[in-house]
Length: 116
Length: 381
Image (cartoon, rainbow over all chains, first blue to last red; front, side, top):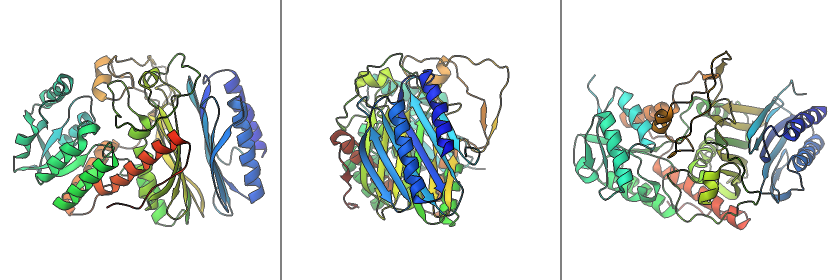
């Protein structure tokens, strides 16, 4: 999951430089080709990143899990929120999107083969 | 060609009618013959209605009189959502086909009233959504053809890059108190209601299923106008469909400078065959040049940039780095409605379909205010 570490660092720089103001809403959707362990690991890493960007520990509002996907709705005491959905499967392309919306703007990233 | 259909519009400037009615007028099958509405409106609303009639060079009429014209067969209905059930059922009772503004109504009871009236009269109804847009049709084709494989999850966003971000909103989070039946204000709208209907309609249409459970949250993240009204500018939902498929959605406004074009609008389909993404901005041509990029102007009566007419009044702010390869979504949707009237086919999103959107949105308000997951009861239709 080196690609997530690189993406995390890049987004953290944007957040720390206040280029989108205070982050308010995170939306991450990722589909992996791989095994369940990778999916769970990535979902945990995204949640950790969100805690850092929103400057606190999020509270799980709702989770929905199936054999090949997990989706989490999370909120923070500041009112900020996140929807994190990670799925995995044997077929198809790896891909996804990241969107972080803040009080002064938003950032977007398309996850694709180049990300990895 | 002699127009096949005579159309009246209900509403006026600073409603969606100002765009819809021009799409009807541009279709060679239609002739717009009047703008009409109920008597006893506020001076502001009637004035805006009369202005639109004047611009279109058609008479402004009392709704009852306009509906008595037997040659009129279509009403494009964009009354305020709070009086939508009364106006639309009046139009349906006169035997007209009705193109409906979204969302269908401000309550489940009002939505049912409209749908039952349409079913009873046998009228063709269609509510404006994005299902006839090229990106949604591509997603639909991918799902229905089996290209995606069995559907595992859907993720839809409808975030408009409009409105001027606040300089400094209070850090105290807004507390959702649910729906009190008021959704539309001059300077802003409740975005879970107004924008949420788009992704809800995409999810139910693509999946062909009703929503079983709704978990939602709302926020006032971006705009002072929403804060002053104590309404949300952002909403998110986690949905469980009837067969257990999971869907998520985000909706709202994120600021005019927060996206290179109109906003983040599209759907991601996760199927047995992997990841498929369909977006409003795809495909596109990107243009970067030494042209001037002006600050987006602010209209005092429309700071959220809701209406085309107000944008023209302050000087259109054109974001033109991304050039879409598709025609207007409103024109495509209205063309599809006319095609259905002419062919006898059922529109993709009728008044009956749209009742469920209101059920989901109302469940979302209940969830966001209670912090609990809300189960939607079986259809009452």
